[in-house]
Image 1 (cartoon, helix red, strand yellow):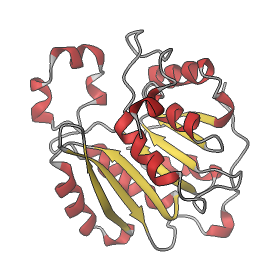
Image 2 (cartoon, one colour):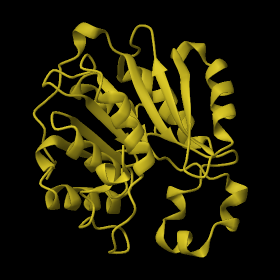
Image 3 (tube, helix red, strand yellow):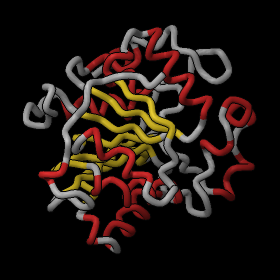
Length: 245
């Protein structure tokens, strides 16, 4: 799959600096490769229901929406600027009818409860803050000038937000639902070990993909077992897609 497929709709995308930020094409392409051949992994309206944690400018969410015509996305971020940017870009690309854009901090206790009304999800996708805290000062100046440090710093081992996402996912994903993450090259081993220490989550690291430089940077994690946090019969099901005003 060519990079142009994942990034073709982003020439007019507005980022935090007013320029077009590069979409995480390698992550998006992997999601598309996994989802497109799976007709069984669809929501009630005919396509996958996707949660993006930390939507930023909306590049990942909007690329998936553009390539999966029946899909719907819930895009969450704790930053007001990110919420506004994602909403603006969704409108620019005329994708606003298939995306919910929700201000949400996944590190807050019980934050997952705000997502229950959309129904069980097929996918969770995230490019979370994953930089090891001690590595922050070594980042290139152009990265620090473009990105909010809070969107980069993942704590002591770069795992702070990653573990919150993994703890949240079993409450929201369908059985056999997937999580796709962009991570630091040191994280596949760390995440694998962390998941082994948390068998209660029923999450399994099933694949690691390298970036174009040959570094292991992308994870595919799958859930198996009964859904946690809410009985199946209590789910109200997906709601009509909208962008909150």
